[in-house]
Length: 127
Image 1 (cartoon, one colour):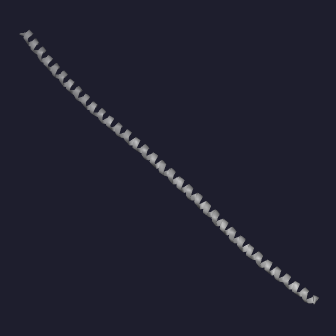
Image 2 (spheres, one colour; image 1 turned 90 degrees about the horizontal axis):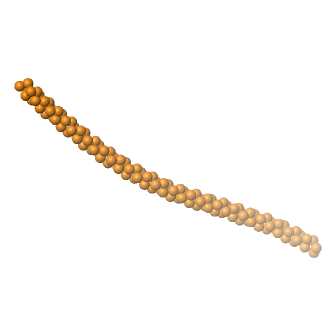
Image 3 (cartoon, rainbow, N blue to C red; image 1 turned 180 degrees about the vertical axis):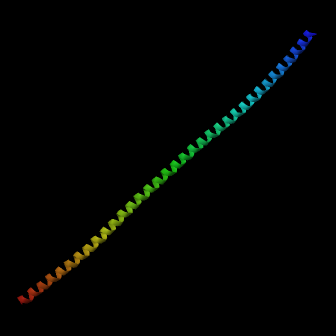
């Protein structure tokens, strides 16, 4: 009877061990599935991050192109403004030259008038 009891205890212990091993196996399998799920999510997140980074680079490139175009426009506007300022300066110079020429003509007319007056006076005195 004692041997039968030991066999029964041994069989019960074996069933208990098998149940524990099965539960551990299931727990390990569950843990592995959870880890695989997390790895999958991590890969998804890394992919999204990569796509976002690429998008950010593309947008930064576009911003750079827009800024370069703006810089070119500003440069062209500055050159146009400089040319306009130069044209204005030339117009002022031309106006001054015309005024100087008019003043010179006026002086020349006055001198001619005086010379004519003197010539007339000399001619009268000779008569």
